[in-house]
Amino acid sequence: MARGSLGSECGAGSGCVHHKPRAGRRFFRDPSPSHRCWAPPYERPWPGFRRRVFGLPSPPLVARLPQVSSGGQRDPDLSSDMASPPAAAATAATAATDSPPPAPPAPAAAATGASPPAADQAPASPDFNVPQVGIEAESAEIDDGDSAYGDDLQSYTTSLKSTVLNYRHENGRRYHGFKDEEAKYFFPNDDMENDRLDLFHHILTLSLDGELHLAPIGDNPQRILDLGTGTGIWAIDMGDKYPSADVLGNDISPIQPSLVPPNVRFEVDDLEDEWVYSSKFDFVHCRYLACSIRDWPKLMAQAFKYTKPGGWVEFQDMDTRFYTASGGIYTQDNVIGEWADTIANELRKFGVEPDPGWQLLDWVKAAGFTNVSNKTLPLPIGTWPKDRKLKEVGAFNLIQYLDNVEGMTLRLYTSSLGWSPDEIKVLCAKLREALKNPRMRIQHNFYVVWAQKPWDAVD
Ligand SMILES: C[S@@+](CC[C@H](N)C(=O)[O-])C[C@H]1O[C@@H](n2cnc3c(N)ncnc32)[C@H](O)[C@@H]1O
Figure 1 (cartoon, rainbow, N blue to C red):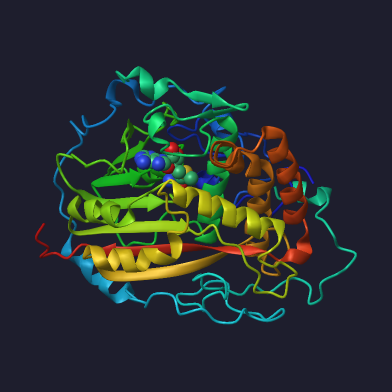
Figure 2 (figure 1 turned 120 degrees about the horizontal axis):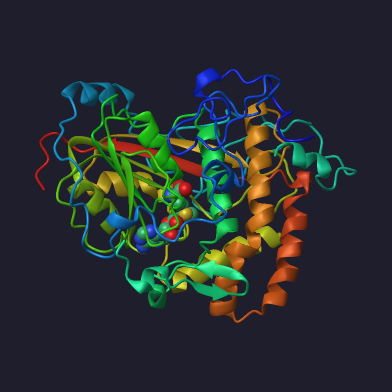
């Protein structure tokens, strides 16, 4: 099925990028009255949307050239203080769930049980301290004849230092240049990877029913910080959604587009360095930095310091752990499980934390935040779930993995394990085959934790 024919007639009206030119998105507009839009009302992109929407043949080398700095110089001109109204705190307090950390290991959930698609608390997996969230499969039986997804899957379908731009090229992929010698980050920063990040943004906003965040930041936030912003897609959407706010995104790679809303800007920075912002933020957001960060408690402490009293933080992240809680044939010794184990183990050798998701809640509390809330979202891989939204999430998630297992594997396996690119290609072919097997009923978790800095906090 061709893109555009899935889903109902676009009901988003002027809220849809397909219909309304918006800052940074005016290149994509389909005036055709017969246009059918598969994007949900909260509208989101698809792989390659950056090039289509922003009209970019490739990401620009420099994001907001005059304002991007590397290292410690930054944040010279964001407007400063704005106090979040105490009312926001009251709202938050009622929303808080303050759940305990994941339960100790328990036996895996059985067969095709229909559990709620999202849970604030969930049992832990037997192999890892990962809570399992059951997803009801579309069919009760594992069909022996159903061995792979077919073609129908298609249907879901600054004055910068030279080091910053001095990207490293390895085995046909491009990697960050800034602090490259410190082996900061093992995944590419090229078009293919950036498309994956944009697709994952779509998966996450779909999972959150179109929300960009769950923290109750009110309608009038003033300063927002997005840590490890990637392509900047979340920051750009936040700039659109909150015209009141100055949104700052940082990343070690200047891969963000230059055509962005006027209240959005980007900096090249290592978020694990000491932060030197001139004023604090109403909202600090940090998403999908699994396999990136070495010292999470330090990151949380810095987030605490640079959040205004009464301000909010939100962490959204995952584990490198897969499981089935729906009677699938997946087992941990499957090629996917072994691959995930290897990625996690090798990253740990470099001091990088591969599994922050389930630990976020404890870290946030330990940092001193209050009104802590959390939600654990199941992210299926494949179209096996019965639930329509999860089926769509699973379809996009499968595409995300199929297209990019090589990008996730290459640098780590070559540099740490000494594998050849050819060996990796063979492994990735096996991974793709396993991922495409709907009988696996494979899923992983995405954790959302949001919390408030106490009004009376003393730094
Ligand atoms: C998986 S991507 C997530 C991007 C974005 N947060 C999102 O949700 O779309 C991880 C990003 O973190 C960036 N990153 C990794 N280590 C970093 C560090 N120490 N400081 C700043 N950015 C970092 C990478 O360059 C990459 O863009």
